[in-house]
Image (cartoon, rainbow, N blue to C red; front, side, top):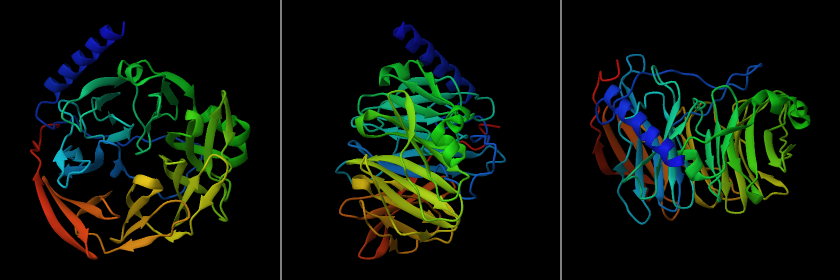
Length: 380
């Protein structure tokens, strides 16, 4: 049965390849996030991001031209572990104007394609060799417009946040690739639960796995000072108990697995905090005056970074760390990515060109230029 589904999925990809011809062609753009009954905090998490896996460091950025003209094409890049140079590894033949979402496991990376124009569901692609080869998969629904919409646990169990706030799950990586997803819960059901009512949950933004491989869901709460982080223990959703000394609502911008638990990035008003959970208690950083968040991501060892609207770049290390300012990001920087020894790369975009800047001795140095073969007008 799984083989039959896999053949069907490959057939779908062939159809998409014909419909969306070209190396990186897409089928238009569409902004459709998770709906909510109450307006969440103003800060949102953009899709531009980076993450670190055993294979290497991955980065997602949008390139090309105007989204209104369907000339925006999302790209995936990788810098393999131990390497110094980046490569373009965007899976071919699928519409990517709606954005890319990625999640990593110990030996694989899965990429989800958000709906755009004529594409109403989310094809998936999985690689175990740093993007050299991709295995097609299927999520027969649209992924939410958030970088935390996918997660893979150590056992291969997968989670996905859909556009309507449903949390879907697949028991293994192979089941996820074969399209064998089932609902785990919905935003409305979670909001109606005891912990959801307590925080006045209004939206779900991210999924992850906590200690014991238990599913975790995070989102936005209307109740001041309460962060909506929930864990599923034996089929019962419980609050992870994350509260801040804030007078306004809190939004979880990102949620990720860390070495001994989980890490979250939280927005409250115009400030951002990092928080680390060891399965029992939270350690919360001091607030960072952030304003607009242009991009964010997680690194190794419970670290994270932010790219802010005024060009500032901020990083934070493991549990109990403090925010550290990097030199102002180079012009056009779309995302940052963690390097070795605490260094960072800045990936700057200008049309079809990606310039990689590397931080060395407190200054950014240009180290690489990648020209992406974008076919403008191919997704009109």
